[in-house]
Structures are given as structure tokens and as C-alpha cells.
Length: 358
Image (cartoon, rainbow, N blue to C red; front, side):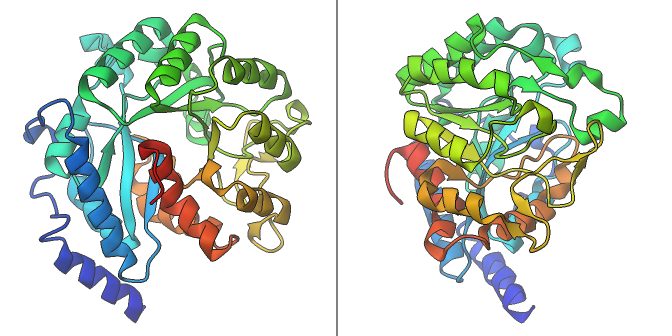
């Protein structure tokens, strides 16, 4: 406890120079930074923050996959929690909600410009998440707008696109069946996305449920666009086991051998997490007897460490989970060697986005 308090205190003192705590919680109160983003200056800020955390003997965490509600986001609490938990940066993607969409008919949310004005050391601007309703109702128009803005503003990462998405546990409780989404991974919208990523080198994320019948079309797209960096979110999150009989560490290893442009994030439920619609454990990566990753999954990550990235999977309806997500991510790291922990926690992200070793 004393060590953690010391770390928090040091980070608090360093914040005056490295990462000041925002003075105001209202994201909209901050002006938008000029575009394109000054990624050279931002990269310097991020490296300085990473080093500050490392110097305290803490492995810095970079969250590659989360999203936030621009109209209801606590800037101050997030900054303090990130410092306390050794979270270097979050790749935060803004969400477009149903009310926003109906009122303003938006295909894009420009709030990362406000976010980078408010707190440029803690966040990595990430394009608008491909979620309901903007993405699911107008997929091709949404992709075209995302490409336009990502090019104009020099985004380093594209948000998570929901191609096949079951209801989350929270949405199931709320009967929000609109989140049961199916957009073929080889649809015209998908081709636009993969082609842009293939040509630009900008990575993007997909939510794509793990089911045997979905593997072949994904592989065809990976083969057709071999330079498209695709982050498949939620390693080994299987919600219906009967639909995913092929998926195991050997299968994933073979995928990586065939498609070196494929990556996975490590955002998944804890060992006791039950998916109510199927009444099954949804995270097949845990050994529930030991509380650690199953050895075969841990070995897969050890063998291909730069293809696995720490992620929190925070959403606009669960922004209060930051501390617990950081704790859970460190539990995942405990199953890995010290060298691999460093890679998965932040070095893999750095190499993916900047094409250089940290």
C-alpha cells in the first residue's frame, strides 16, 4: 500500500509538468485543437508520460480499445485514476448515440479535438466508433466520412467497427436488441474500410463474434488487403460454444502465421463472467481453478507478443469501470513473462501505431 501511495504521490507531483489535471470537467468547454493533429508533439508527450510511469517501477498500460460519451465524461476523475493506476494513455473513440443521430444526423463526432485540447498527454485521438445507429444504418456513408476525417485530421487509429455483435450483458438486461448487429465483413462498406487501411497504414478495430462460419470471409479480406492492420477485439470471447468449435490457440496461431496483419486485443470478461443469453462462461481464456490464463493461451501470447494488446473495452454506459479494468488488465499480465508483459502493456501498441520499436 505504501508503494502505491508513493507512486500516486509522485505522479501527482510530476503532473504539473508532464500531465496536468484538467481544470474543468466539461469537455465542450475546451476549444478544439487545430487540425491536423500535431502527432510529433503528441508522440513526445506520450513517451514522456510512459517514461515517468516506468521510472516508478510500474509497467505503463496503454488501452487500445475504449469509447466514451462526449456529453457525459468526467475528465478530472479519469486523469486522477489514470495516474493512480499507471495508465499511460487511452485510445478513446467517441460514440454517436441514437439521440444525437436523430437530432443532428451525424456520421462523425469531432470531440477528440476537444479531448486533445483538455488533456493531450493521456489520450490518443481515435476515430468515431462504428456503432448503432450511424454505422449500422448507413455503413458506407459512415466509412466514407471516417476516411475523409481520418485523412484530413491525421488520425493514428480508427475506432471499433461492429460487424457481428451480440447484445452485451448490460444491453441484454435493458432489452436493447438493436445492438444485435450483422454487417458482412466482405460487404461494400468493409471493402472501403480495408482498402483505406491497406493504403494508409492506419490500424482499425473490429468487433466480430467468434463463430466458425465467420472465419472464411474474414480470412479472404485479410488476404485481399495484406497491409491492412486489423485488431480483432476480445480474444477468446466466445458467447455460444456450439458456434465456435474450431477456435482454440492452435487455430489462432495458424491465423497469425497466414495473416501477419492480424492483431488481437485482450479485453474480455473475468473468469466468472457468464453470458446470460447462452448461460455460458464467455471468456474461454481463463483457468478458473488457478485464476490465471490457461497455459496454452499464455504460450500463444508469449510466441507472438507484438500481436496482442492491452485493452479495457470501456463504453459510454460503463465509464465508471476504469479502475477495475486496469486491475483486470494487470491480472492478465501476471500470467506472462516480464518481457512479454512490457510488450503487451504498451510496446505492441507503439510498434503498431508508429511502426517502430519502443
